[in-house]
Image (cartoon, rainbow, N blue to C red):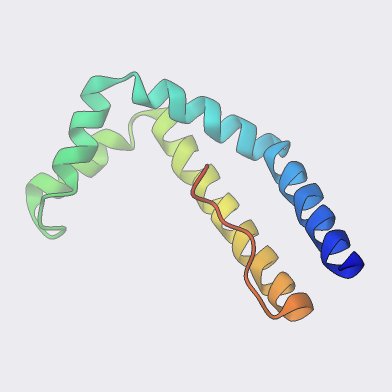
Length: 105
């Protein structure tokens, strides 16, 4: 029981560190800002329904990447996903289970 409590406390500590990471904070701010941009949201939505080889898809993708906030968001999201992947690999070695999730970011 004591070991389980220590493990839980360490996990909470780890998640708190992740929540306070400057990349996560920046990502959350950018996400809020991007969600207020209806034109951008419409483009992202349209993009999801297009054939990735179509000219329309390619043009829309170019338009999206002209938005610096969108580019930064994509970059940060990738960095955080890689960080979480690394954390999960380390946690799995230590505990044989996967505990860190990134749905909230």
